[in-house]
Length: 407
Ligand SMILES: *Cc1c(COP(=O)(O)O)cnc(C)c1O
Image 1 (cartoon, rainbow, N blue to C red):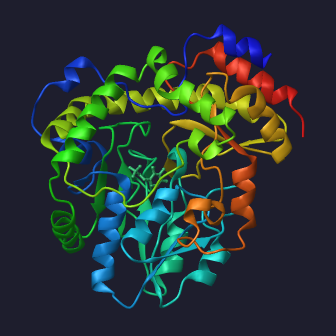
Image 2: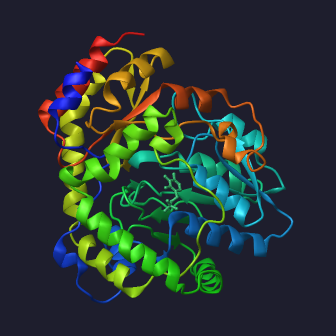
């Protein structure tokens, strides 16, 4: 089955739903990206940054300057490794906190055990458009004077209590990296409800993120490459073939693009890329609505498969749907499914390969920790891209494999 899926397909589906760029997006224009998004998602002014990680570094540097005696940052033990690198790069200590069983969200008990007077911030994380319990993080954090930074890198436009994600915590940030919905190849947006904190963040951003001709030229060219290749015919070259090569050499971390190194670039975002993002952003609300409709169409079928848990959102929240995040009832079954689907071109993949303490390249950055739930979700989860090119036949092929594979 897997062999004929692979050889029959000429097209490659992406692992997440990115908004495809149009030629007309590449025309010059006002650098209005942050303004347009702030209007769309109904937030105070947003600060453009060169990445989500850069937004996090600017947030942490700002908080650390106000609270120099607090050096620890609590993060879910299953999250993007860039989060750990960003914390380390600004000279703070990563504290991995275990997640709830079969979920990515901070475990309430574990969170309370790690939050104390040495803690600067906690980072509840909205993964894959799914909503984290920010109220609980705020309750645990504010009780001991800790700030809450919502990592909404994968959740631009998601809503929590009738407002954008990022508005319940003290600070929030979004990523505009390739494959995270709206993209200017690498970029981010930083959000703070409080005007005084917001102007401090803007000041830190100006100090830390200066214009840099090398990085901006590099990102411009990469954005042109993204424009050219982010379509089913180009994704094979840009995404599928490198993925399959990495899997053949037994390197799943490289296969999902989880392999990062320090230092992370920190520079201002040029006008042209912000103009390109502004042009494309006009189509974002419709694009996200279509993703939601597709998700609603496919969720009942996925949820009916025994032993497969599909993560959804709590009441009072509206997530976005770049992909489906599934937790299977065993690692053996998850691995058996991926054996048949990961290389198939159907957009099935994994999110983060390891719990943070288990990445080789994070040794010395993330301390060893007993985080069984994080290890379990890393071992039992997989993702299904919810791109505009996903068809009923594709989803049918994916569901058949999920149904046929047993724990
Ligand atoms: C991608 C990502 C980041 C970092 O964003 P970049 O724009 O890639 O630097 C942070 N947190 C999460 C959960 C992410 O997925």
